Image 1 (cartoon, rainbow, N blue to C red):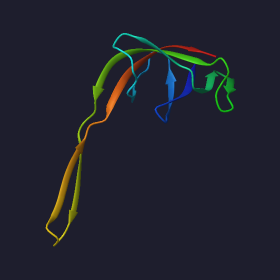
Image 2: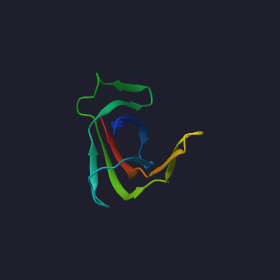
Image 3: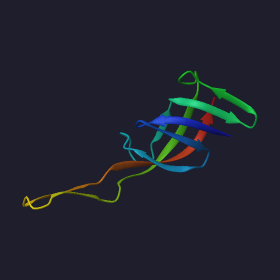
Length: 103
């Protein structure tokens, strides 16, 4: 059994027991989170598709950790103009473990 959910502007294919990193959510470690933007739920040959979201579809997950990803280095450089700009970015994420899928 798996589901397709939407969170943080992205879509993820999840199944029970899966760990994934999503855009930062306002929840503490150990909290339970309900993701209600479910696009599709499939259980063998039984497939339910929402338009755009599935009515009554819900995915429950537990927050395992909050963190920040690796640093991405950005360099803007213009040759012969004596111009160089450096910048770095670390994206915040929430790591979830899927505990239940309800259709």
